[in-house]
Amino acid sequence: NESSSDTSSVVSSTTRQQDSYGQEQPFLTVNIPFNEFSLDYDFITGKQTTSCMEDATLCPDEITLRNLETMTITAIGKTNGVVQLHIKSIHATGCDAVDTNNMDDSQEKNNNEHRVEQLTCSSSSDSATPDEIILESFSNPSYDWGTQNDPVMGGESYSSMEMTESDGTAYFTGEVKNVPFLGVPGYIKTQSAGMAPYPDVSCCDSLKLTVMGMEEYGGYRVSFGTKRAKTGFFATGFKGNFDAPIGEYGDVVIPFNMFSVEWDEATGDQKITCAKDPDVCPDMETLQDMELIAIWGEGAGGKVNLYIKSISAVGCSSSSSTDPLPSIGGDAENSSPSIPSSPPSFSSNASKTSPVATIMMARLVVLTGISFMLF
Image (cartoon, rainbow, N blue to C red):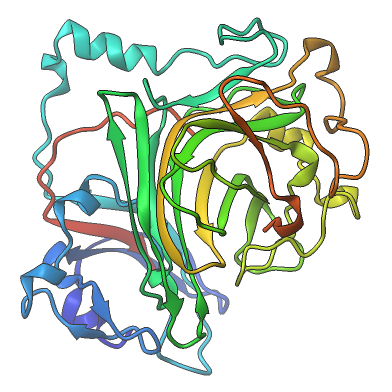
């Protein structure tokens, strides 16, 4: 970046590596103060349009600094250049951390509870029904949840995710708007984050969401896993569509064979269904640890107001844990899965089929900059 000499200060040289010509090049520690970042930058060139110093509302805010959610290193604004960048680490520096040695017993107990081993398909489940494995219950969340929107690709959509302790629900709200330079709806999503594995659900046949929408919206999707599609560049995870019940909580049950890893990055719609090609169906490795779960508003403009109580896998049997893919039977595009009778249930919309982790141990910190090591 041509402005890196202005915004980055080289602090130290730590080690050396050989480049392609056999010349040793030093790793350098580069510090970039947070007040030299800005939310307002040119999508084409990457240059800041308005700096943090010029407008404080464009500086990194407290919510973002508490959970960065995503990090990217880009080469942008220059053409016909070859990028060869070796990165050792990325840190926040100038931190004033809370002394965790002084945590009281209740805090330590809470942290330990999130370190317990997750249930697997060969384990007995403690959920309400014997064939169900809870992946996330928002009455006592096991994972951190954040949001990501299409402004990362120049869009104008927005969203937020709030936990409501009083009734044990999560509230995902926002609006999907058209991406200006594309002229088509963008996306919003809320996704899990953390470091612990998900339970093994490879012996289950469906994903269940207990949700309630506040108005009609036609672009709900849910995805899990991090497997990358063969035909896309950004698309990762197995994605499927669903319709949310309006004004009351209901169980939305989506068979695993209605998910696909091959979906359109612009619309979220499936390009190749699991029914047409088994290679795009959820694989055993992903079902044994989903790593990441995301709920999307995508491919359809409009406001999203979705309450979420829980996410689970159903139709589980320890005797079938070695099956490569849960068997639903019939045509995956037209099958009607068995749905629990209470609360009211809603099947997925398969015709429009379009990221693990315990709660991160939060630390109160005062951050003054971010650094990374490179040469």
